Length: 319
Image (cartoon, rainbow, N blue to C red; front, side, top):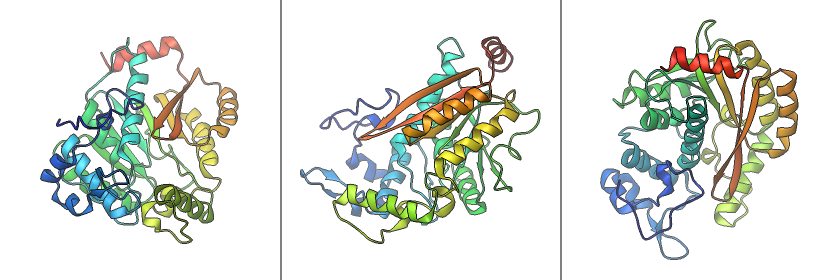
């Protein structure tokens, strides 16, 4: 990796996060030339891009994945969410640490580890990072056939992902895990970036805030392509209801999965989630903070397996 030593390291990111070190734009444009027209001086005269421009953000992400993760093809429909890679990588590294706690402090790697990405989307971003960093196997589920098709194309176009990621269409909008996890199937960990907004109006307000934070300008009808399509952003009841449903459904798969996890954007939701998890008689709950820039989120993790069951899981599956 070629480092840009003129800029400070982002120490708030995980030590294994490749995005901790400032990007070397000069080296990146050599492998991803379509980034070139989007590079421009920022307010302090440093080379950067316009982060309010969805095309610029997409070109930067393509370059990051090519230069730092070895992904040669990465494309998706314009209406889909373009993920911020540092935060996605942070989630993967944090759940690797969580698995290490069940493995004597050593991160379990390789094809024995199976991760379910709930809502893989059109970009396949979590499996890309998980395969690249830890050689895990992934199932990516989604309710949108177009997103599944897009992720499948990314997988088939990159040799490092072939045979490592399976995409599975969720045919029932009321289900999250049912129809995806088989009766006897074992999943080491689930990950989820749930739909945040409860309605289209909420999503529009969120896009306005995002544009204002990036540009300082108020935009009445922002370019929603920057924010993702309806299924990625909106769920009846928003993040709270989605995670509530996930917790309820996880009880039925209590012996199929070692750890269930989900991102939680609204800290105010945690108290209700804790109460519900205790009602479901989980064995352990963990909350892990994620900081990316000025934003703080958290990973909520829970397991139904007792300590002895987790030790047996490790022995039977990982050793």
